[in-house]
Image (cartoon, rainbow, N blue to C red; front, side, top):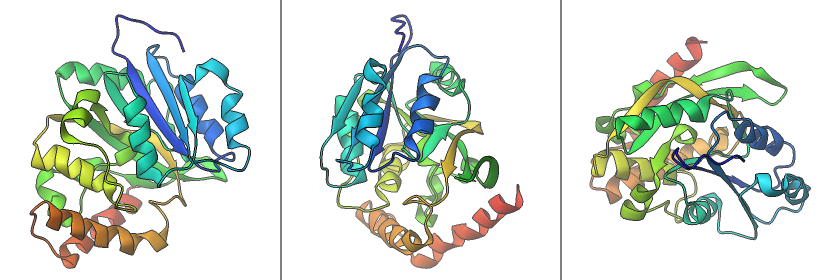
Amino acid sequence: MKVEDSKPLISIVTVCFNSENTIKDTIDSVLNQTYGNIEYIIIDGGSIDGTVEFVQSYGDKIARFVSEPDKGIYDAMNKGIALATGDIIGILNSDDFYIDELVIEKVVKEFERNIDCLYADLVYVRSENLNKVVRYYDSSQFAPSKVAYGWMPAHPTFFVKKDIYSKYGVFRTDLKIAADFDLMLRFLYTHSLTYFYMQKPIIKMRMGGVSTSFSSVWINNIEKLRVCKDNGIKTNIFKILFKYLAKILGLLRL
């Protein structure tokens, strides 16, 4: 991608595994951004379908590409963060894609507020119709004081300055689903980092991934209880489950 040295370098990290059916939308949504100073890093977990060959077909449009076995999605994210040289880091999974080509331009503009982090809304779509929104994730529901209820901003919309990861750590690899909750809890609640909420959707997420499957909900909530306990936050399963009432409102909003 074109590099403009006068602008902040934005590192986008995509982690994938056997993602040949979805990753094209992800990659194209990054490469089509109007913002010129993007470092795109893809971390593959050793795919055995056509993912590796497809990513390689983009040549030097991908700044760094690693394909090797890992210890899970959060280990892969940590690898990408370690490789990133940008001023700001965003993580875009291989089931997700930016809603339009102006997303990074707008994100960079908001970081002129001298903030540490930024998050926004996202919408869920189905693979058979990427233009039909089936659920709206309203990150305005989040506040640091709500972590005891399991609230978190939409993680795929989360952008963080590189030095924050260096100072406060990366993703826990002993958690299967809730390491993003743990990370944002530490950043926004424990360390009270400055942040800005963009009140608009910036990402489309396909239904059916790890974070959207019904089978993962219970594990996610149990891990959130563990994370709160590890960080000295008093809560219980009833508090954690209460947030689903608000999520129903997200469906009614459509």
